[in-house]
Image 1 (cartoon, one colour):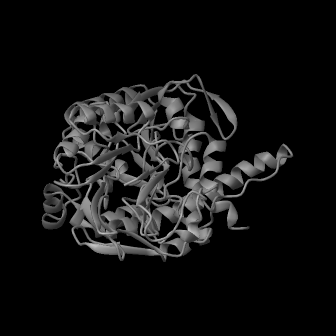
Image 2 (image 1 turned 120 degrees about the vertical axis):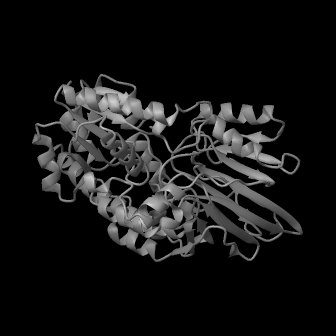
Length: 483
């Protein structure tokens, strides 16, 4: 495979050219976070995530990386979610040979998640290809394999919060806690080029205050350039106590009619928080005990990663977990499903239960099988607890489209659908604006609004302009800007 197809001719890699940034993903979209910073001819990639959307578009976007991977000097990762790390094995497969920097917890999570992503791709392609073979269609190939994922893990360099480190001779990075998931980071880059010094703040995915388990997001008081997410750029989340009440009502209603609760959920972060709230509701006597299955081969490993990183916990969780030797996550209530045969048995279960399975946007993995087998029964509930990107199966579910296409087959949607976006670990409009307002406005020169669908990104951009920052850009895919 020739390298010329990956070379971006718009780059001139030599010292003395103005530093710039180019947006290769999560531009007017939520998934596929990937932004290229060029300083003194050195290329630093901020995140390298999988794009999720229409299957054919997603496959083409993820397969055809729009630059030469071998020309990238380093990758700086904000956190472990697959839409921020999931294309790293493909980057390495195509020639990247530098360091991948992350926090210690993100490194440990990626070790589990990238292997799982490779396994899911291999299994899903095998499943789909059986059907394609019957139709006389050519087979698909996975984007990357388990070997590619294992090769990628060798490139990771784990670092602590608040510990500055050099990525290149002219770029220093400091990780601050983003409060989104375990190990998530705000990336602060102090850059020097031709006598010019610049501080760039990349929020990654910014978390919320007062969520259980992990700490609140850190504050940043000064930056020249802000790159901010905007997933909920024009929405306000419900109060968490209101969300717990809604969760209680959904579970009790479904149990009352003898149904199952199917929960598409990110295996990291959202699953642990959801179980935390269920644990509280059970303990308060607001819910009857029901089996909770986490149908994910990596779930046990993810749990162990949580146990290894109490430095990421908030004070309440740390005291309960470390000093009182309690189980703040309620993990003892969970029944982990590792093997495929045990997963299949859940489809014949008749008693009420909850099944939590990845992926969070219903684009791959065992959740597809659970949806296929349960979406047609009106006794059941499909409960979504996070953002669903455009053109994903998850978005079609929350839109309550009457027919769902799963593995190429049509299934009528008769199950109840409930969306509790208030459980999202993303900051809402008020929290995003609070982060922005904590910055020194006299110093701030430019704001780039990314990681949000166009309406949400534009809305947040307008709110920022109203606060006095003139240069606010909502970049298009591929757009390059001089810093």
